Length: 301
Image (cartoon, rainbow, N blue to C red; front, side, top):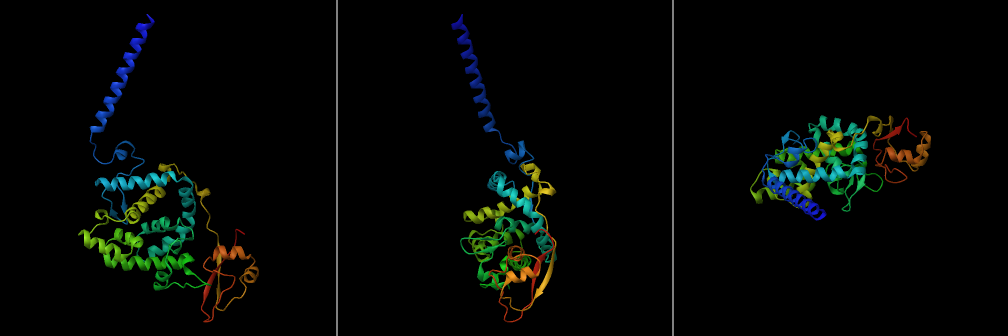
């Protein structure tokens, strides 16, 4: 009797394995329109998405996969993505109005997000600030860069400089998506590849890995930051880093000791440099009596 029961159990187990295997084989041969993720998890993969009003062709298989990759990567970079969400309220309050004033689509704020995570960082190549300008490029666009002052760290001025770049690139390409790609690869590099490959669309270009991923990283951060709850980032208003109220003071001469200046304003050197990161040393050399505006916090110290 025991032998018969064991045989029956083995038979049922074998039948179960065969049925499950058959289901997997059957499912693998099914063809669903669009992306599998979109078909089964509409809260994860968007049915459609655009950059600066230019629709992303998600019907193209490799476009789907490239966006899926960046969504997955950034969804699981929990600490990094959460920090970006916390910083966004403060940084976007400065970036968004400047983009709007210059006629640049709001989506370009996500370029700053993927360039730096919305903090003043230094790349191995020497690019600096939230917008990651190289020294020569920064000077060409009108930013002051020297050992005492580096306006790549001045968010307002650097954002204005980025807008100047975007507008010039738009005249060249006539397409905002290509403008964004050129911010990574350079206008000359993108134009060369468009001519070689005889196409006119970013999504039809075969590019190096970094530039190939660049726009998709922008799209992924846009999707996550606009719908954080869908990606397990239900950040509250209280968790966002606050905008600190400040006043501006004008300096039109050299300052030999910034620590003393800070104390005169009722703050310390650390706080002065946090709010004015473009001041790169302990002094401010100003032989031409140029007017500079310093941010002095009214709270948070």
